[in-house]
Image (cartoon, rainbow, N blue to C red; front, side):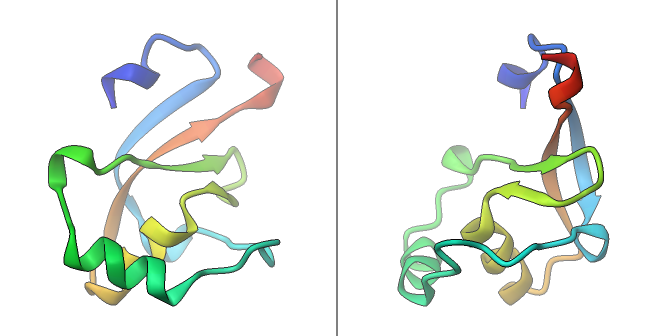
Length: 86
C-alpha cells in the first residue's frame, strides 16, 4: 500500500467493506480458472489492493475481489483513484 501513498491521485483504504464495492459489467469478466489459480498459489506478500474510483466502482482487481468474496472476506484493501487529481 505504501507504493500508492506517494501519489496524490490515490487514497489508500485498508479494510474497505466489500459490500460497498460496485461492479459495472467488465469487458473481460472474471475467469474462474484465474481465481482458482490465485487461490491455489496464494501469496500474501504479493497481494495487491484493488483499485476503485471515487464512487466505489471497481477499476482494477476483479479477480482479487472475486477471490476475496469466495473466501468469505468482508473487507479488502483498496486504493481510490481520483482522476481529477491527476
